[in-house]
Image (tube, rainbow, N blue to C red):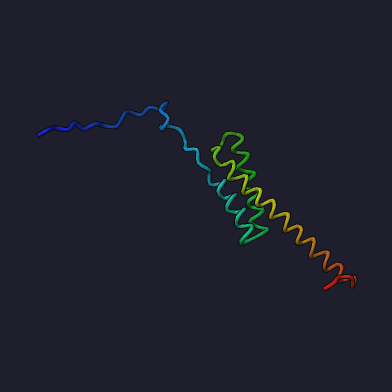
Length: 111
Protein backbone atom coordinates (compact mmCIF):
# COMPACT_ATOMS: atom_id res chain seq x y z
CA UNK A 1 0.00 0.00 0.00
CA UNK A 2 1.39 3.34 -1.08
CA UNK A 3 1.09 6.30 1.19
CA UNK A 4 0.19 9.56 -0.61
CA UNK A 5 1.47 12.54 1.32
CA UNK A 6 -1.06 15.23 2.18
CA UNK A 7 0.05 18.66 1.03
CA UNK A 8 -1.25 21.84 2.56
CA UNK A 9 -1.82 24.90 0.39
CA UNK A 10 1.13 27.25 -0.05
CA UNK A 11 1.46 30.05 2.50
CA UNK A 12 -0.13 33.41 1.77
CA UNK A 13 2.13 35.54 -0.40
CA UNK A 14 0.76 39.07 -1.02
CA UNK A 15 3.22 39.64 -3.87
CA UNK A 16 1.75 36.71 -5.83
CA UNK A 17 -0.53 37.97 -8.66
CA UNK A 18 -3.54 35.99 -7.44
CA UNK A 19 -3.35 37.33 -3.87
CA UNK A 20 -4.38 40.78 -2.74
CA UNK A 21 -5.27 42.08 -6.20
CA UNK A 22 -8.90 42.93 -6.92
CA UNK A 23 -10.29 41.52 -10.11
CA UNK A 24 -10.48 44.00 -12.97
CA UNK A 25 -14.20 43.67 -13.64
CA UNK A 26 -16.69 46.49 -14.16
CA UNK A 27 -18.20 47.69 -10.88
CA UNK A 28 -21.89 47.70 -10.05
CA UNK A 29 -22.11 51.43 -10.75
CA UNK A 30 -20.77 50.89 -14.28
CA UNK A 31 -23.35 48.19 -14.89
CA UNK A 32 -26.06 50.45 -13.42
CA UNK A 33 -25.13 53.15 -15.94
CA UNK A 34 -25.38 50.66 -18.80
CA UNK A 35 -28.67 49.13 -17.61
CA UNK A 36 -30.20 52.57 -17.10
CA UNK A 37 -28.96 53.62 -20.54
CA UNK A 38 -30.66 50.61 -22.12
CA UNK A 39 -33.73 51.15 -19.93
CA UNK A 40 -33.94 54.70 -21.22
CA UNK A 41 -34.58 53.28 -24.68
CA UNK A 42 -37.11 50.68 -23.56
CA UNK A 43 -38.93 51.47 -20.32
CA UNK A 44 -38.58 54.93 -18.80
CA UNK A 45 -37.09 57.36 -21.33
CA UNK A 46 -36.46 60.45 -19.22
CA UNK A 47 -35.92 58.96 -15.76
CA UNK A 48 -33.63 56.13 -16.80
CA UNK A 49 -31.66 58.48 -19.08
CA UNK A 50 -31.00 60.86 -16.20
CA UNK A 51 -29.94 57.95 -13.98
CA UNK A 52 -27.63 56.62 -16.74
CA UNK A 53 -25.92 59.98 -17.13
CA UNK A 54 -25.47 60.43 -13.37
CA UNK A 55 -24.20 56.87 -12.79
CA UNK A 56 -21.91 57.11 -15.81
CA UNK A 57 -20.32 60.36 -14.66
CA UNK A 58 -19.86 59.13 -11.08
CA UNK A 59 -18.24 55.90 -12.23
CA UNK A 60 -15.97 57.55 -14.80
CA UNK A 61 -14.74 59.97 -12.13
CA UNK A 62 -14.02 57.08 -9.73
CA UNK A 63 -12.17 55.16 -12.47
CA UNK A 64 -10.04 58.16 -13.46
CA UNK A 65 -9.18 58.74 -9.78
CA UNK A 66 -8.19 55.08 -9.40
CA UNK A 67 -10.99 54.26 -6.96
CA UNK A 68 -12.80 51.81 -9.27
CA UNK A 69 -11.65 49.08 -11.68
CA UNK A 70 -10.65 50.40 -15.09
CA UNK A 71 -12.59 47.64 -16.83
CA UNK A 72 -15.81 49.59 -16.16
CA UNK A 73 -14.76 52.63 -18.18
CA UNK A 74 -16.27 51.44 -21.46
CA UNK A 75 -19.41 50.08 -19.78
CA UNK A 76 -20.02 53.35 -17.92
CA UNK A 77 -19.28 55.44 -21.00
CA UNK A 78 -21.69 53.49 -23.22
CA UNK A 79 -24.45 53.82 -20.60
CA UNK A 80 -23.77 57.53 -20.27
CA UNK A 81 -23.84 58.06 -24.05
CA UNK A 82 -27.12 56.15 -24.37
CA UNK A 83 -28.55 58.36 -21.64
CA UNK A 84 -27.39 61.59 -23.28
CA UNK A 85 -28.80 60.58 -26.68
CA UNK A 86 -32.14 59.67 -25.11
CA UNK A 87 -32.24 62.96 -23.18
CA UNK A 88 -31.65 64.81 -26.44
CA UNK A 89 -34.51 62.94 -28.09
CA UNK A 90 -36.81 63.62 -25.14
CA UNK A 91 -35.95 67.33 -25.31
CA UNK A 92 -36.56 67.31 -29.07
CA UNK A 93 -39.93 65.61 -28.54
CA UNK A 94 -40.97 68.14 -25.92
CA UNK A 95 -39.94 70.99 -28.22
CA UNK A 96 -41.93 69.44 -31.09
CA UNK A 97 -45.03 69.12 -28.90
CA UNK A 98 -44.76 72.71 -27.71
CA UNK A 99 -44.26 73.93 -31.28
CA UNK A 100 -47.16 71.85 -32.58
CA UNK A 101 -49.63 73.01 -29.92
CA UNK A 102 -48.36 76.57 -30.23
CA UNK A 103 -49.03 76.52 -33.96
CA UNK A 104 -52.42 74.91 -33.36
CA UNK A 105 -53.30 77.73 -30.97
CA UNK A 106 -52.45 80.21 -33.74
CA UNK A 107 -54.45 78.18 -36.27
CA UNK A 108 -51.39 77.48 -38.41
CA UNK A 109 -50.82 73.78 -37.67
CA UNK A 110 -51.53 71.28 -40.42
CA UNK A 111 -53.17 68.09 -39.24
